[in-house]
Image 1 (cartoon, rainbow, N blue to C red):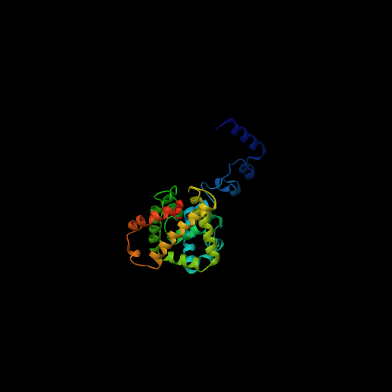
Image 2 (cartoon, helix red, strand yellow; image 1 turned 90 degrees about the vertical axis):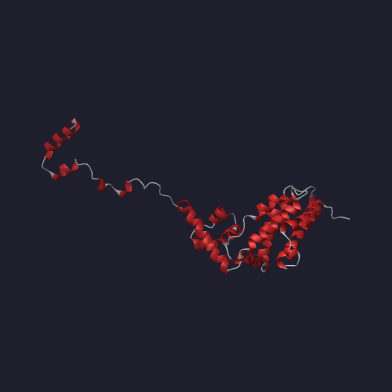
Length: 241
């Protein structure tokens, strides 16, 4: 043993070598006697949403699907979904961007229509009408394959606040950014865009809502190629006499 141990032993014997207290004072503490307060924290322990990020996201989707299936879109709030899922309301924006994004994913609707239409729009010049019309028809048919899409449309039409919110969302995320790509400026550019927008909505309503024949049965590509140039003319302002 080391000299320090020998010195300690001699000192202990000089006091009382037979004392249990003296002997105990020189014994190393047992591992199980270490205070839990001084022990190191368990490694890899995380708290909050990062502890089970995938689980939180899936729980939000499950709660949202149930809520949107039972109630109309305007009456379901972000706070109510978050409360039911047991998480912070801010996580809905973090994972899905918005209430509309959560609805789209929870109800298995198509990919982001804004992104798809924006790509099809391009620079707003020749060929835009055909590309956008084809993109819109593809989105509609993809969405219509899910019963949830019709429920979403009905909820918009039956609620003025929801319709106003949707109009604002369309204007901010789709209309205004696309108009900025078009030639011209000011009020005339907005009028041209909104006229073209109404042309597309009218065709979609005629084909899919009213189901008028033979328009409803024409192949999408053929319909887009025939009607697309008319939309191009409106965007370019060639509708004037």
